[in-house]
Length: 143
Ligand code: HEM
Image 1 (cartoon, rainbow, N blue to C red):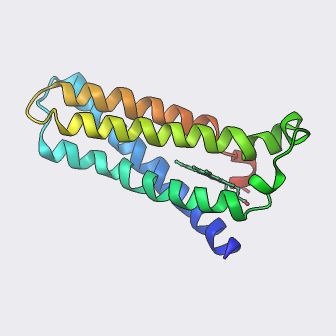
Image 2 (spheres, rainbow, N blue to C red; image 1 turned 45 degrees about the horizontal axis):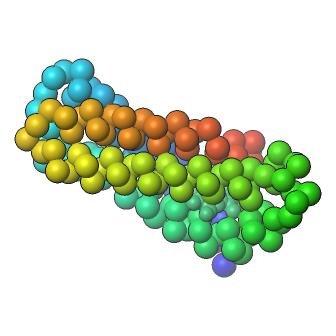
Image 3 (tube, protein in one colour; image 1 turned 180 degrees about the vertical axis):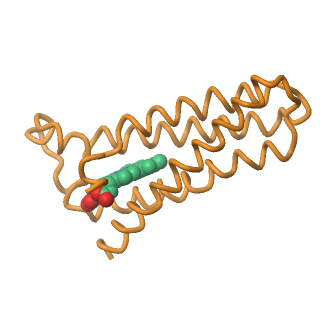
């Protein structure tokens, strides 16, 4: 079960990055173009929201079964940058990113027909993307 979850989490990370980046760029383009936020634009936001939600559920389970998650939590672990990343920083920042993206989508959904939906999505998805990029274990992932 652990290996399967590990592969799913690792593979889904590509879809998360791609989906959130597409939603963000589309929202930014709409904002800069001064267009009206339509239902089609709202649906583009789902490209970022859906893989991110799936990913955090898998991540949460992984946190309890992985030797790198809760199992390695200790006072000494906090002094080591790599263990601290897996035990604390990665889960915390990713959950914050999921919350930001979810708030962004929910707010923008209620702004269909206005131009503010683009601004909302640009800010919340943009902040979420920065948090995700800042705490991905790049060295372990891209080898
Ligand atoms: C947007 C959300 C997330 C993204 C994009 C993401 C991405 C990643 C990536 C790329 C890796 C490295 C995979 C590899 O070594 O091949 C990883 C590992 C890990 N993630 Fe996440 N993650 C997310 C959310 C979470 C959450 C919410 C948790 C826990 C609550 C979590 C727990 C873990 C754990 C424990 C590992 C280490 C797994 C292992 O190799 O044993 N992740 N994550």
